[in-house]
Amino acid sequence: MLLTSASLILLAVVSEAKLEFSEDMEKGFTVGWQFDGEDIIFEVSAPTLGWVGIGFSETKTMQKADLIIMGIKDEKPYAWDAYSEMTGMMRIDINQDVTILNSAENGTTYMKIKRPLKSKDTTKDNEISYQ
Image 1 (spheres, rainbow, N blue to C red):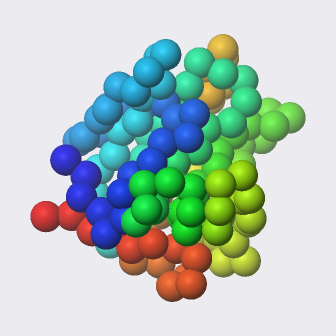
Image 2 (cartoon, rainbow, N blue to C red; image 1 turned 90 degrees about the horizontal axis):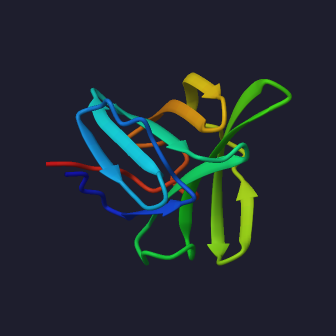
C-alpha cells in the first residue's frame, strides 16, 4: 500500500499496473507504483487519447496538490511536474522532477515515469514516504 505524507489523488488516471502495487480505478483507469531506492515509479493508463495525471495532496483535494500531468502530443510523450493552489488552477513547476521511462498510445494513453520521493523543490512538491 502506498503511504504518503500527502494523500494520493487521481485525476483521470489509469495504468497497466505491472509494478509492485496497483489500483484499478473506474472506467478502465489503472495506476501502478513501486519504490526504487530514492525514487518512485508510476505506471498509469487510461482509455483516452488525451492526458493522464496523478496528484498528491495533504487535503485530499486539488488544493495545495503536487501534480504530474502526462500525455502524448504529436507522437511525442510529455510529463509535467505541476502544482495546484486551488481546484481548477494548475501551474507548471519551474523545477521539473519527472522522468519518462516509457509511453504508448493506441486507444489508451499509457505512461511510465519516475520521480524522486523527496524532491529538491520543497515549495511545490510534496514528499512521498512509505513504510
